[in-house]
Length: 187
Image 1 (spheres, rainbow, N blue to C red):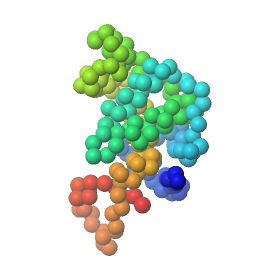
Image 2: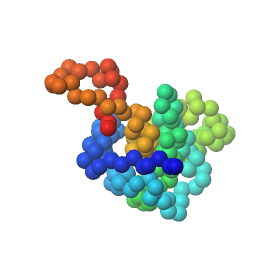
Image 3: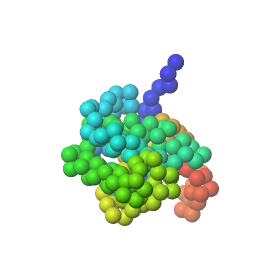
Image 4: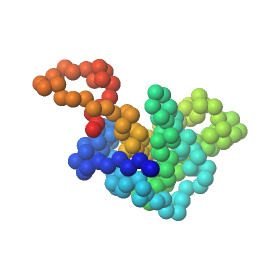
């Protein structure tokens, strides 16, 4: 028996998107916002709009942005499939080109400095290159971060493991410390 898909009503979805926009430091792009409204079982990626090498670099970056800790990594919860779907279906041509240029820059830099592919580097060197991308081309890194974070928190595992139900204490407490619970509210 398969698990039912996580169902969020429109109000919860809007609230979560607003919260993620704060985390990302920008508004969620229309492509990502549209993609999360499609149930995971109905997300069918169209023809790939990136090379297998660009895809591998993007997927590796997702795991660098959200690695496994006491919760699963980005790829473990299906962010790779989410990225494939969004890039093949929802990104505008200019948005896709910015992302692809950033992925190509990571690959080129790895080739220049270490004479190997980005995905073959050790994680320390990968993080160095990803940090450089963030400094040099905020748009490409921002898109990678958006795809990773939105894909993660709209997955069933991301929603249920990263967020927990915190009952209302019965009164307003403007000094409540989030670090006491460590997670946001979810039902």
